Amino acid sequence: MVDLPRMVAWATQIDHQRRDGLVATTGPADRIVAHGGWEREAGRPERAEIAMVIADACEAAGLQVPTFSTELRSRLGAVLPAEGAAGNPVDLLAAAPPERYGRVLELVAASGEADAMIVIHIPPFAGVHGTDQIAGAIHQADERVPAETTMLAVLMTTADAPAELRGGSRRIPCYAFPEEAARALARAAERGQWLRHPDTPLPELPGIRHDEAAALVAHALADGPRWLTVEEAARLLGCYGLPLAEWRLAHTTEKAGEMAEELGGPVALKATAPGLLHKTEAGAVRLNLKGRQEVTRAAGELAEVLTASGNPPEGFLLQRMATGVAELLVGVVHDPTFGPVVVVGAGGTSAELPAGHRRAGSRR
Image (cartoon, rainbow, N blue to C red; front, top):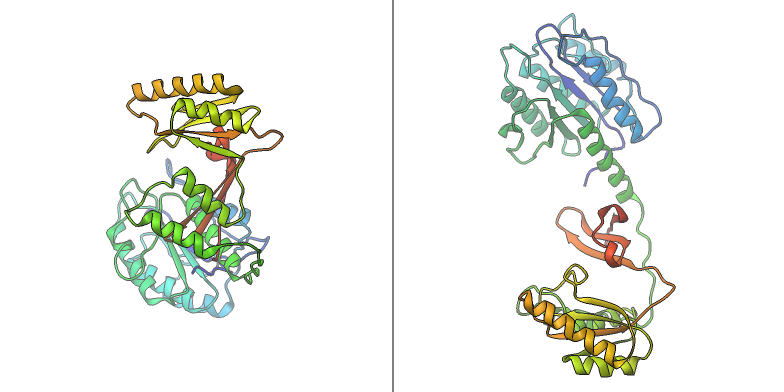
């Protein structure tokens, strides 16, 4: 679980004409304090600009950049060169060796003033220490800091993330740009706050048949994963008090016509077949059909089209047309990282448009 009421820091190495920095934040809040003052080099971003970019991203997410305490500044000053700065950002100076990275990160983590650290490294044009060495120092520091301290790395290079960040018991997320790291950390902090909220008591709903639903699902999975049949899906929804529009299932075109007559009024006709999931795209749906003859003829047309495409229908689902309502999609999956995840959005032919969906995690 990520718990980040305060967000901390990044260290930056640019090249031999610039200095290296570490910026710390505490949050959530509406204030960010950051300072820079690095020289610009042609074709390379000024480090103060990088600091402002990530500070703005943190501010937009409700995180705060604080000022280090006097005690921490004194400890940092003891490991920095005379030209360095122990404020926020911490100035590691040009071509800072890996050992300086590691020591500064450990001191900040041990101070209790930081819950997370964003370490930014821009490889110098010419320098003694390579990105792999800096990554190794970051990883070693991460192994030694408290487990509740989160560390992220930003390596502004076209190369893949160094293997040093992926080893050991704790993997360090690596990003190409500071904004990405800030957004990811803010999301983690937001989720950590949400997880700390007390659970909302679940309402006691009458008539819920949990055991029957569990038995139905277990039976369906006995031969391996598959999609539920129409009958199984209707039974499962019925266990939780979710009714369907009145429906019938026919196995021939003639029977479809008879059942449409039983339902009365306009009906929707859908062909059913294994693997036929997106029926509209497959041309397997007809709407607002009336009467036996119209439904029988439409069912025959569906059978002809689907058989020609190599997916002959096994039957036909008929449902009374619903009017005056909006179609809604609700789905749930158990994600290995986030647990139960629910998606809610527009249903029907809009179901595959991601912009219309909203996802939310659950504790249960």
